[in-house]
Length: 247
Ligand code: ADP
Image (cartoon, rainbow, N blue to C red; front, side, top):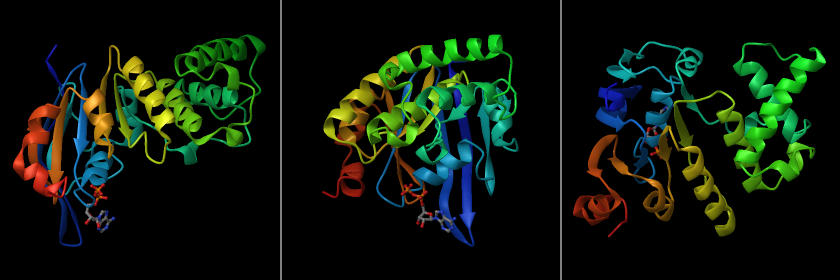
């Protein structure tokens, strides 16, 4: 098995003549937490959407686990184990927390949005759903309506529904955005835990989170790779300080 799980070569996205991402070569090692950071407008979200196939690159190639996935659809790459976190907007507010995870499991296993299944199948999904809720620290919220969860707990639910797809590699888009300090600490611990045996790509603004979690970091600026390395290396890089930290 190759040490590299995801690789891009010359990844480029043009929006009506504007190069949002240009010539990006990324190499993400299996089993690591890789951070993608950079100032606003650097191209992080565009890159994230290219990797999860929500955008089609203008040029370049994406290889996942030895396969060329450049022209694959999101559902196809998800079946290969490359899964993006669902945004909170994908949480069904009127269903309970448990039902949300159960729906994610049903979808992951190819069944439709269908609650009228046999009791034994439902029990089986419920068992796994409760395990996933325990993994993300939401056991005590299982029967609550998802819409009434505090914000930080909703993000944990989002991670549980992502885990339902049994990802080999998870892509998390700003999992701590808008959180209180306490919630940030909790989600950092959670990401550490769920990253065991997986690869994680994290787009993140909060540098403390990046420092605490990431083995490797790629810094983007104006659509290009500005620097790569561990937190110490990139945070000391004068180009990064100028572009990212505004010094
Ligand atoms: P980041 O996530 O690092 O803040 P983005 O990837 O959102 O950066 O954006 C990179 C650049 O591409 C920005 O200048 C943004 O305005 C531009 N951009 C992003 N999406 C589009 C789009 N759909 N159409 C036109 N320009 C876009």
